[in-house]
Image (tube, rainbow, N blue to C red; front, side, top):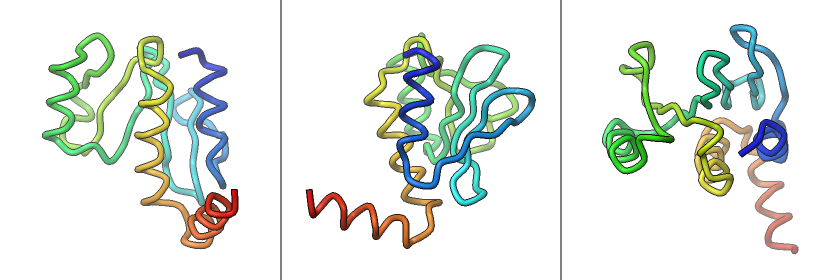
Length: 116
C-alpha cells in the first residue's frame, strides 16, 4: 500500500483528521487517536488488537505485522505499510473507528449505508 492509498483510506472515515505525532503523520477522530505512521520503519500503529490476535498476526504474517518493546503492553500491533493489504487496513480502522467515533457520526453513517 502506498502512502497516498493509506491516507485516502484513513480520511474516508467520517470525522478523521490529519495531524502530526512524533514528527510523522497521525490521524484522529473527535480528538482521539485513530492511527499513525511511524517514521522509523514506515509502519502503521493499529489499535484495539488483542494480545492473542496480535500474536496470531505476527506468526501468520511476520513480514507485515511486528512489535517494538514500546508497544508490548498495549492492545495494538504494528503493520508495515508496504505489505499491508488495503482491505485489511480498512478493517482494522473500522473496528477502531466504531470504538472512538461520536455516536452521532456512527448513526449518520449507518443511516447512509442503509439508504444506499
